[in-house]
Length: 158
Image (tube, rainbow, N blue to C red; front, side, top):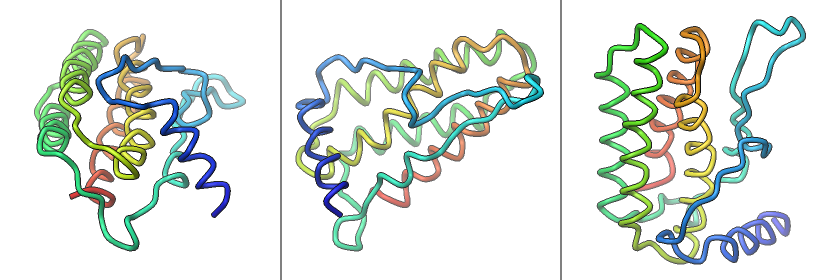
C-alpha cells in the first residue's frame, strides 16, 4: 500500500496537468516490446495493471472527452483493416490523433487523474510502437494488445 501511495504521489507530481506535453519513454518497464530468446517472436508486457486501483472498490469518474476518446480508439481498432505495414502505421497515427485529443481535453484531477495516467502511459507506448512497426506480425500483436488495453479502461473508469 505504501508503495502505491509513493508511486501515485510521484506520478501526480510528474503529471500535474493532462494538458502538459506527455513525454513517452519506450524503454520504461510498463509496456515493452521485447524479443524472446529466438529473436523472432515479440510480445507486450501488461505490468501496468498492477499499478491500477479502484476508488474504494468503485470505478473512477472520468470526463466525457476521455471516455469518448477511448471509445473512438476502440472503434478505430475494430474497424480498421490492417493488411500491410502501412495499414498498421496508419492505424497508429489515427490512434495517436485521438490520444492527443484526450490529453488536450482532460479535466480530471486527483486520484482519478493519477490512475488515468497509469492507464494512458503504456497505451501511448503501444501506439508509438504501432506507428513504427516494420512487419505485419508485430503490428498484429501490438494491435491486439492495444485492443485489450482499451477494453480494460471500463474496468477502472466510468
